[in-house]
Length: 91
Image (spheres, rainbow, N blue to C red):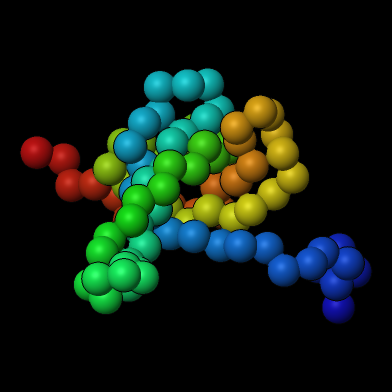
């Protein structure tokens, strides 16, 4: 067993779409989540923007990616890229 994985606690993992890759080693991922509205009992879609660390610069706008929660890397960035799940089809 790897000791590093044993010491780490539970880290959140999300799947989303890259909406921006203009920054150096940072991408913005839009994560979609569906929830019931507490008052109206209607299913609504809620989006969150996650600033994500992309060390190798492999993700592009439109790609589906998996991200993992990590320690704070800057004021707004506390996620890192795990893998690119799917590439956007080029027109």
